[in-house]
Structures are given as C-alpha cells and as structure tokens.
Length: 223
Image (cartoon, rainbow, N blue to C red; front, side, top):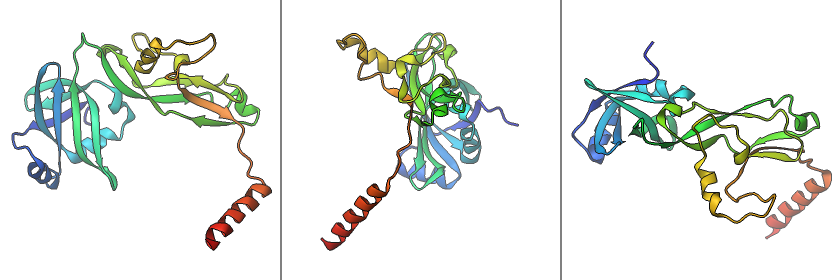
C-alpha cells in the first residue's frame, strides 16, 4: 500500500489553460508548490492516486512529503479545486512548503464526542454542529489531525464556543486574536468567539403552522 503522506509528482514547464486542459485529459492534476521564500514550482499529479489520498481525512491536516522526481519537499495541502459538478474530479491543487521555524495556518476538522450521553440530549434536545472544521495556527511539528470537542456535559440551550475548545499544546485560533482589540464588558463574548456546537429543543411543527403555510401557498397562487 502506498504511503498515505507521500505524494508522487512530476515537474512541468508548460503553463496556461491549454496546458492544464491537456494534463486533465491525460489523467493528471495540475498543481503548484509555493512558500518558504522559494520560487513557485508547477507540478502534475496522477489523478487516480491523488483521489485515493483525498479519501483519507488525515491527508488534509498532515505534513506531506511531495516527491518531485528525485527531489523531496515537505508541504501541506493548502487549497483544492474540485469540478463543480463532480467532487471526484480534481481541477487544481495548491501545496504550501512548510518551514519548521515558522508558524502556519491550517483548517482542521472537529471531532465531536459524547453526543449520546450529553446532558442536553438526555433532556430531549438535539445537537447542532455549527462548525465542522476550524482554522488554527501552529508550528508544523504541532499540527494536529483534528480538534476533539467533548459535549457530554453540554446542557440544553447552551453552546460551546471557540474560546472553550481544548487545544493541543502550541496551537492557537487566529479568530480569537482578532477579538483581542474589542472592549468587552464582564461576561460579554467577542463577536469572533463563535459557537461551535449547541443543543436545543427540536422545533415542533404544529397544526396551526401547517395551516398558515397552506394559506400562504394559496395567496401566492392567487397572485
């Protein structure tokens, strides 16, 4: 089995829309490698191999080894462009070189645990995932594959916010750094301190609501 975190690539010199179109017809994915104060390098990936990598969640938040011929680059997948009508067709990819001494920003998934035994769920509430991923900042060595969110103690009509996430050592949230300039009263939250997950009572669609909806439909038809 191929190494999940090693990506085979080949350098390319032809650029432009026509060249990219020809690559895609040949089963390749045009891509670029940039960053670390080096010149960007245009590369091509095997589409089918790349799709197999993308099927693994860990691939999106992990340091990758990009093999360009005999040269190796330590990178992260920074951007991905999929075909608008087919998620399994990759149009373009961007890789960012990593520098062990420089902080980087990445988007990593959130893994929610404790939902079945959550206090609010036992009280009849339903869980609403406001976010499924979050942007973090850290050194490459501290990059986590995901952030775990334990909601087992979350009560009904309550939420867990960004500032309440338990972050691994060396990891911070850029969104909260924006809010440091705000003047907040005691107990007030920053506008940047968004809710990540909450538990609320399910909305009951009553007979009266259905009647109002039906009336609205009739009026719209008459118009």
